[in-house]
Image 1 (cartoon, rainbow, N blue to C red):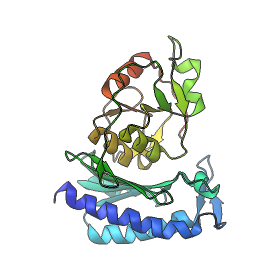
Image 2: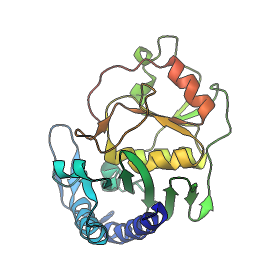
Image 3: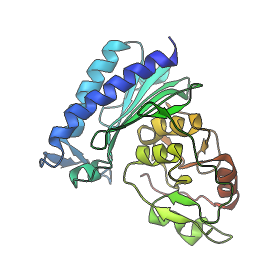
Length: 265
């Protein structure tokens, strides 16, 4: 079954997720703290997750399932293809009434993402990518920035990423920006609106699976924070941070960064 068929499935599911989530936005949904620093979850997250699990698993019963809001099962490790889902990426932003939250949907085959959708319902921005077919925003082809020098590069990252401990040779002269959703940060790099995205601490697969393919298909390079090739559907579904950028900027960042062991996002 070609990745483009899976992409249509993800595209339709992402828009359906938006239809479910938007009525909860700015409507004071019920929330719970997941504990252990994992942050909040809302009734909107759970409602979206229920719909996606039912619809996607019915459409592809042979695929595995990995979602932030579902109990994990090792059965997914035995599947050639697996859904990697974040029902709402940026739940804090969602609860605060911010518009920069997204639905992040991906399918990985033998560890590599082959189809991806990131949808921001409030802004009506649908980013799509299928391996080997490029990346689009609302149907229009997108590509990473053409920047080749680090000076003045715009980087999406949390404040702590620019702490001196990560940059033994000195912090490069970049402009730091922030968006709450990791999937959206990667989408913006794929779109060429920002030059790079950095995460230094361990990162859950569901936050970045879809966005990583968007950057790759838009002509950029994506690795973990050590410069290693990404592999998804791991027994512990987390990556050692992430660097996403056009190849020249990615190479510069890899040369100057000094990753350290940190806590999970």
